[in-house]
Length: 267
Image (cartoon, rainbow, N blue to C red; front, side, top):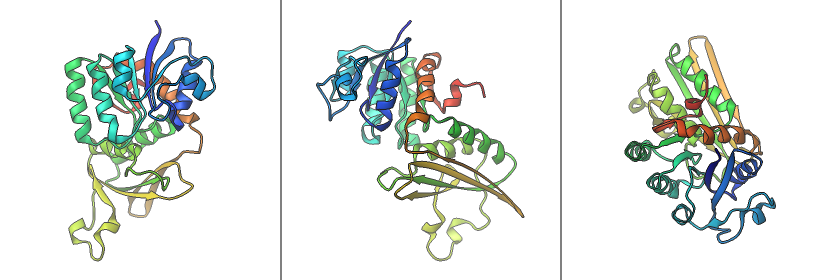
């Protein structure tokens, strides 16, 4: 059975790499794409691939109304992602979320609709295998080491902070325990903001500088010993493609909201 996909953000940096990979997959077909910039064009013409013969729509609502799909893949921006996801669920599609910047409250609303519609939503802050392993290793370490802080690295052009990768990491660590602080934040002398932001029980410091793409570092510490776990992404979107394809193929096995690619991996 061929899985029909609607891809929002199909002409973006990561979305275009995914679209080209879908075109090479015998069990997947792209039936609709969403891109405001290239609306009313053919995706194959935009990406220079004759195998991508699907129309581009200006909005997700237009695409979903015109082209029924089995899986809606959200790869746009935080300000429209939630509305896109809810629209896809209302149209009877499972959803894979690759867009970062959605809050826990947003996911709470999405989870409620997914349960009502009995569809699966797989939210993945980062599809790279090294990120999946960072998250799992960090969860293991947090069981034994009570103090840690997270550094979130990204391009100076990235508006949302922290990244979806780090939001997901803090969400997972919160299920283990909150990090301990020797000096409570309210007792900080000087500029309290330099201690970072408290997010889901973890201290997070977001750097936004040229030359970074996406990176995440978590530092665990005990007296006289430290453990550092770090992921860094290069300039290519290639590391995210295989994980995204796996998510597309497996999201139909889920019901309700699930966070993290490991939800459909044997880890």
